[in-house]
Image (cartoon, rainbow, N blue to C red):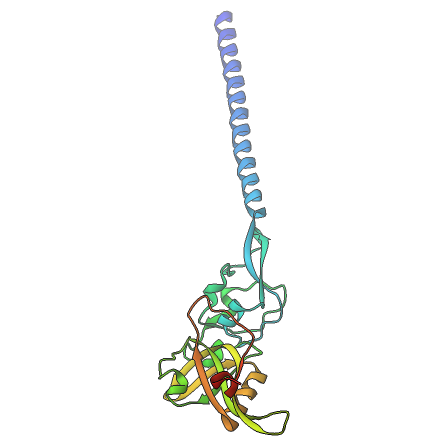
Amino acid sequence: MENIMSSKLLTTRRGTIFLGVGAAVLAAIVLLVYLNQYRNSVDSGAQPVSVLVAKSLIQKGTPGDVVGSTELFQVSSIPRKQVKTGAYVDPLTLKGKVAVADIYPGQQITTADFAIGNPFALTQRLARDQRAVVVPLDSPATVGGQIASGDRVDVWVGLSAQGANGVSKPIVREVLQNMYVMGIAGGNVTIRATSKQSGQLIFASQNAKIWLVLRPAVGSTNARPPVISMNDIVGP
């Protein structure tokens, strides 16, 4: 009887030990899995992500097209866990949008900062130093009406210039190169220009004859603006 009791006690103790060891092993496995997942999550959160960050103040109302095509932003690598929800990673995705609030230097640019803008508004395609100026022209001056929105043109001006001897002579001169055509309606051509270029175009339209010369869609280059006089046509 005593042997039976001892055997049962031994068996019970052995079972208890086995259960305890098993529980400890299981707990160790669970702990290792947790630590591994935690380490992975920490590593994942520390991985850098490239997002758009404001380089200078982006004022409310600034077109996304302008932000995406100028130096108003920079691409910065930020730890994933610090990336804001909706952060932009591609400047092309700003196209057609407009800033709904001021975005300060160093601030991540997110979808909350922009809304869909009016795709037909000229202001959506102008940077802070750009203006839209309308130049009235006839058909030959607009390459027979074949100039269209999005084209690039050179601006030539024909006028009478006074020479060193005080005698006026007709000349034509290329005054602006690679100007962007924003739109055309009839003979009115809207050109994107700086403030000074706008003044040059306005002065020329009032005091001279303007011709637009269409540039190639790709691969065009700028050269020293030429001045053409009678000597270039008939010789000295």
